[in-house]
Length: 270
Image 1: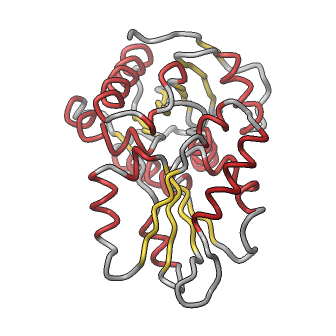
Image 2: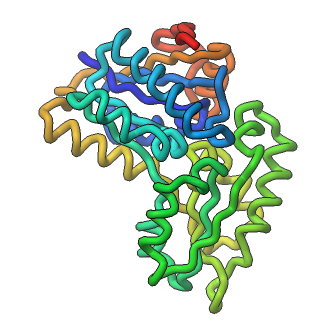
């Protein structure tokens, strides 16, 4: 059974992987965390494009993947058009901040987007934001350092940064001019949603892309006749950094035993 490749600059894509495994329980996945070269969100496009190409090629050459999910907003905005052009026979699903559902559900018309600086400064994000300029006011909240804190299991740092960036995302409420919807525009941020919620009223909506990406992946595979026909799903972990750290992250964020189905410490070329 062919595998579905999933990659991110680090552990953030595990939030998307969890949604994929729930939506596609019979599929086998290989997850690549490019932690030795993270974070992508605070790098330039050329850097992200180079890393995305090398990771995609690694997954294709080693595993013959039947689909690729770019579980990183920054890599999607910088590189997915090139990956699709270079691998036309491979279905590739990417991410973008979930502005469309946020605009559809917001009652005040005021939305904050928490994302990396790389995502928020991209032309793709600007075009997405501008497409809703007549129907919503969108506030960008670049969350410098939050990805690094999550990657490092820095509890104190996560709490401090969540408090800071939620303060910048407000004021929250249902009155005119108040934000009632927050888009989690980086795959790392759903992993700390509970910490973010501590600094928000109970009615505040948080929207991320995990479930929609999983649903789109199912649709794409079904249209190509590539859905797994029953059987038990599985997961392999791979990365450019310390595999033990990735295993610990999977155990923590996915409630997964530390022993992986197949742990593969295979750094890719620089």
